Length: 291
Image (cartoon, rainbow, N blue to C red; front, side, top):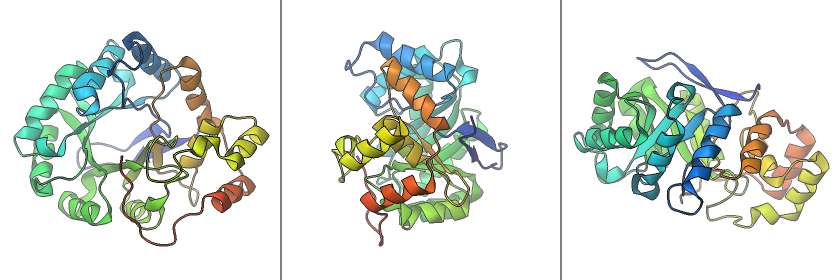
């Protein structure tokens, strides 16, 4: 499994290498699928090497964290666990309380990474102070941001220095806005990208992406599924470097298996050119796509 992304070393943690596809948990814990199936899916993903598991206090009002916590019982050390804090809980004291509540729901005493879910009215400097305290207390190992566009990301980076691990943003073939300004800047700073909704579940563009004829044609020629094609495209190397971790959610065993298999799919230049022609990269700065 060569499709990996390395998170840079911070002032307290060494660099860590992770699979370029992880597991999301948005909409878990809401009764849309039996809880046992959601738990089993996360465990199956771990078995297949999808070791990064992403969740948030927002998802099902903590219910997704409880599902993830159940899935990780006895297996915590096998996972790279990520959660996120509401912007209104991101104060110097409230972020600490929110993180402790997440840890309790997850049944663990630490997170591998903690993210600000999106920017709000609380100053970024105050959130950073809370994150640094949580790290000093051993409750989180790394921290980062989510849904921050270029200006906010630059403000955060100016405060945090080299300690920002990732920015988690919406990214899929039909929503490529980050490619113009945000992602190139992040690459310069060594900040990895986590791409949510990589199977085009959201965003202002291409909500019907999975049924797009050109994607169906390419996938058929490669003998893969359209979701696998989208995942392989999202994690493709750029200038020989992978810097994006896609975090699809899956519950059905076949979908978990297909997500893991996408790590081994290599798209050649001709395929990439066809996809670029059908879904061109932006030629100007656009506002950040958020769902």
